Length: 88
Image (cartoon, rainbow, N blue to C red; front, top):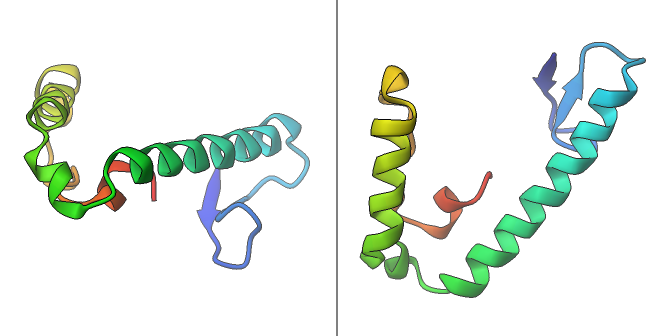
């Protein structure tokens, strides 16, 4: 259980203070977020490269329509920029 908090070290803030597994999870989340951002920045240095990558777009469509077909909602981000590829 977390709430967004711009002053928190990891972004979200835990609503339960003494929950060590959740604290570890936030640290892991930060590490994954940084790795994904670095990867995306390396392979998609230009914004247009995200939209023109047919394999990436195909995979994202599959994730939304096959992997989560029960959750086909308008809140899914559209992959147009490197920022939408990462967990920002």
